[in-house]
Amino acid sequence: MKKLSFPKSKIKVLLLEKLDKSAYNIFLNEGYDVESYNGSFNEDELIKKIKDVSILGIRSKSNITKKVIKSANRLLSIGAFCIGTNQIDLVECAKHGITVFNAPYSNTRSVVEIVLGQMINIMRSIVDKSNDMHRGIWRKDSKNSFEIRNKTIGIIGYGNIGSQLSILCESIGMKVIYYDKVDKLSIGNATKCNSLKSLLEKSDFISIHIDGRKENTNFFSSKEFSLMKKGSVLINYSRGNVLDIDSLIENLSNGKLLGAALDVFPKEPLNNQEEFKSNLRGLNNVILSPHIGGSTKEAQKNIGTYVPEKIIDFINTGNTSNCINFPELSLPEQRDSHRLIHIHYNEPGVLLNINKIISSYNINIKGQYLKTLENIGYVITDIDREYDKSVVNELKNITNTIKLRVLY
Image (cartoon, rainbow, N blue to C red; front, top):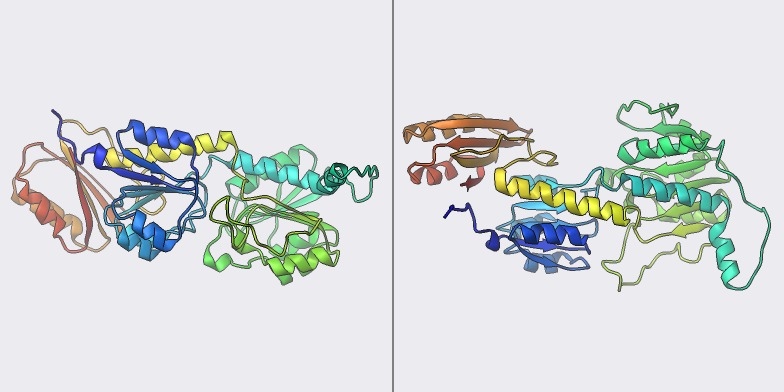
């Protein structure tokens, strides 16, 4: 009988926030013990649930703090079933040897489509007119109704979603300009703006696509609104903290903006039973949606497949391809050997000490792979199957070691 590094039935998986069933099935079929919940947990609840968990799957509502990580003694990997990872303390995860994988491309099309749809809805006052119809009011007019063709969209953040939105908007006759702090090549006829000010002054639509890191909190506030054209439209399908809601309400109420569409908010309910509370409620020129930009069957199935496969590959082989907080290593198939996975702080001498210890036991190294980031080093060493198991304890005790795993 083949010896396993760790019995798969003892690898416990905790999935939160109503992840697609495909994720549950993939982990279950791998032989793991899987537990799934539709909602998320607060910090104290999560600390209680995570103590014996090896794999954690979340979306954007679960905050994986330093306190949570320190209580997760058996945690090997976290899957963010979304694009953003600002809800996870990535540095602290790395310090504890916990890999983090996300799905940077899987829901791009879904977000782009809904942004485009909301632009049209706002320009044709569809929500207002639909609500009137449900009340029996027939209001056939062209007031505040416009085509989006020949309008200028300013895209803030030209990453996966921003660039794909650029392509679709140009294909339906819009002029596309964009601003990104990182130098990004334009796609098609999109034009890069050298400053955010320039973009805001020229745009009929502003669509925000930046991440939710702390320094981006209230990135878009009163100053930015003051630079926008009168009658323009703001769309935020990125992160709730990047937009100053009070400033938005002021500019919606005083007529500066024709309308807005928001899918993300500074404070969001933890589950579908909790009430959504916001001063935006009741404003008829803002479309609100419950963080569903990437919530299509297609996107969730893609994410539900992609993230588990990356995590399982890491558990089984040590591969860290597309890992966002670890050095990336894609390894050849392991044949007739045992694999030692050594995670350590990136300090001089660790690799030398690893090899000294292995050599002292007269163990043959069949293959060795090293990759480092600024603070973390990742060494994979394949050795002959027969060896003195005392070597494992010595490797664990090397100065600056974070975690050692043995794969059989």
